[in-house]
Image (cartoon, rainbow, N blue to C red; front, top):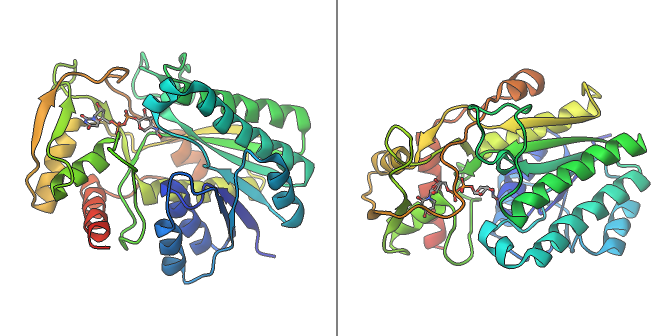
Length: 340
Ligand code: WQD
């Protein structure tokens, strides 16, 4: 029988791309989302791309009874958890809201999974757990650093919840994927990022500036100790990132895990500076960006990029798409939503 994967937050940016890759790899997918931070654009896009009617539940994972019911009434072989708040600044202003939402939802999922026979749990974690690493690139063994925001702390706590639960209960196994900076959009231009209000992240701010929604991009700091003075990040294409989830689910399903709880860095291994990204965007899309150098943004780390060799070797996954392809897709998506 075809295994079924529950994708919490499956209507969002990352969740919708993962849904498509899972279906294309032969899985059944159930999407559940409370739609608190997205509309149905990406979910509809996922249905169009796959040509499938994807089962959808509008529900809040903080509602324990609803989560139990979902696991009781569906045979779920694996769950991937994306349903969470993700704005770093907002989490500093609203810590209780962040802790309640991001922790309750995951606790409910782990509890329901172990109780109702779903043995495989995949958690979407973040490179934010590494803070500013002493040694670069970062491996999975690099120490986590004290989180600088409640958002980042919820990622660390959920990793620990998964690790401890796998150890205690014996009937579940878990993988945490630590994403670096996911960017881009589906090449079909039917799914992509839809930030509400002013984007916090670099690429949506770039595309919105290029199309004229924003006046000017601020480059936060050019006096960092890096080759061109701007920060270095590991930008990972959203479709490549989504494929890593399929590899991780395959690994769990096939019982190929070396430990019952595993962590993988999901990045390219190549550092790219803010300035390089801005220049690549202009070049590949033939557009001119209005930008200025602004003061550093509080809380930014200077440089972080992955050593993805564990994921390369153990998951059989590797980032494929070039930064140019990714930035082209991001721009095509911006043009698509502008004309919708
Ligand atoms: C990238 C670089 C900025 C906007 C954050 C979260 C992390 C993760 C992904 C989310 C930095 C610079 C940005 C702008 C700029 N998780 N920048 N002008 O900060 O690496 O990571 O998003 O769910 O947890 O912290 O990503 O895209 O915000 O910034 O110059 O208008 O671009 O200073 O160097 P970041 P980002």
